Length: 405
Image 1 (cartoon, rainbow, N blue to C red):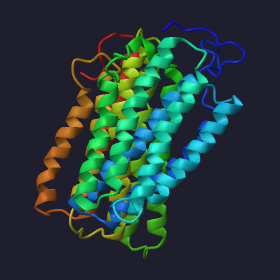
Image 2 (cartoon, rainbow, N blue to C red):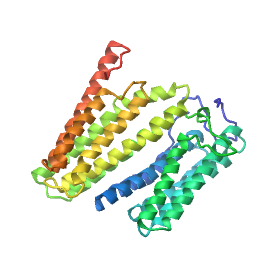
Image 3 (cartoon, one colour):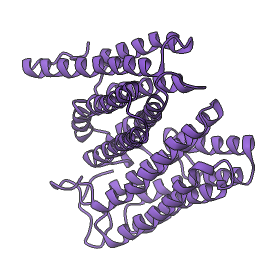
Image 4 (cartoon, rainbow, N blue to C red):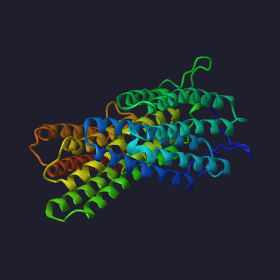
């Protein structure tokens, strides 16, 4: 879809200006609800650290992510400085608050609240967009008409699931989540309306990149919040203090791995891409869900290590190792997609290999949670230093060879 400057009455962003991709303060205000949602997710997993609890929190996490990333796509097109868009975001914020409040008991007494809030967010936002672009290009309207069909089917599954209990609810919600996930892959194909084209997803790359980076900051901030609150409530003996220091170091290393070089290079890539919609779909919509999941699991792991540095129950050790592993995996996928590599960066593959080596002592309980956390952070340090030094060496010599080979 060709880029153009919207008319004075249009609610679309003006493209091509110096501040065209700037994130508005109303968008940051909207994100405050998701600070709460992320905290609710980590606390829910801690309260039910079982395979069932892990599956449920994983499902709810993806639901939260789809609401947030879908809204970010819409504000990539619409101008959040216009009053109607601001009012819509504030209304969506209230619905998001309802969804966040329901998270701890979403599979119990507040399932209907969660489902209705989710449906309101997805369908309400789409209807508003269709109203906002009623005088714009027909392709843009067709695109969101298709999206509305997909979201309506998904919302039906969410609501039916909320009226059931336990396994049946999980099954219906898993089906709804599959519809949400497969929609962009299928270009929202609908009989009679056809499918969208990647050219119709003409995103402002710098805006979407900054939005996702801010969500990563939100998740990292939540990790520090949980860590600090847990440490403040404990007796400050040596194991607890070491666990706290290691948790803070782990958060710093996660920040470094994502922000030092990866997001900068990816932003430059999408800003100059011929089809930014394709990269936005793969790198920012899908890969970032894995990155955020890794951060949340790391937050749970930090609380486990601080509270129980010598022994973990149930899936405790699995989460301590799994959090950093998922985070490195998400970054590997993100950087693979955005840098024309034949394979993910070698530094990240090596880190994943080291994490795999730690799986055996974790499985056999040959290490304590604190020892495993220290070893996992050592792997994160290797990944961070390897990539950072390699990229800087290449930039210094101005070579075109991939630095991470």
